[in-house]
Amino acid sequence: MEQANVEIRLLEQQIQKEVDDFETLRDTLQAREDTIGQAVAKEYNLQQDLKIARMEQQRLKDMVKVRDARIEELTPEMVDGWCDARPLDDSRAVQLRDDALLVKDKQIADLSQQNLKVCAWL
Image 1 (tube, rainbow, N blue to C red):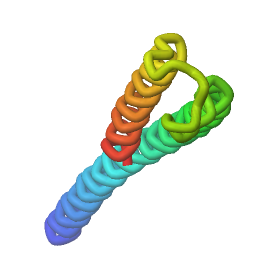
Image 2: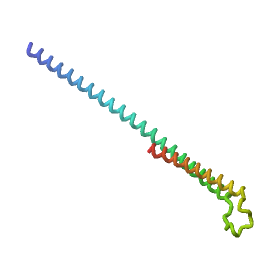
Image 3: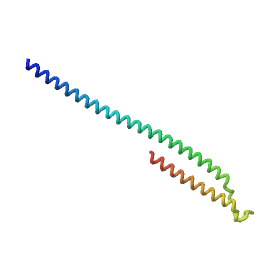
Image 4: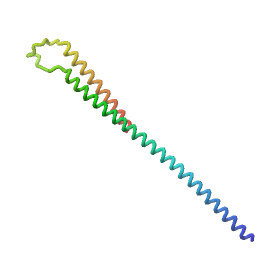
């Protein structure tokens, strides 16, 4: 009888150890699932940020095209100064050219900044 009680206690101890091992394993798996879930959520957010950045980049490219076309319209036709009847100090044309160059410089700076941001997101 005592032999049976000892065996029962040993079996109960083994069962308790296996239950403890199972709970530890379950907790470990749950922690890994949580980590994976967080990584998936982060990846999704980064994908969304990238999508938004690409849309913004395309929007800016379209704006540059429109502005380039407008600058092309505003840029006076270039002619040889020796053959032109206009005076050489045509200040309005020079002012328009200078304004167009300033706008172009700003566009280049803006696009460079946006490209750096997109590269940083990638």
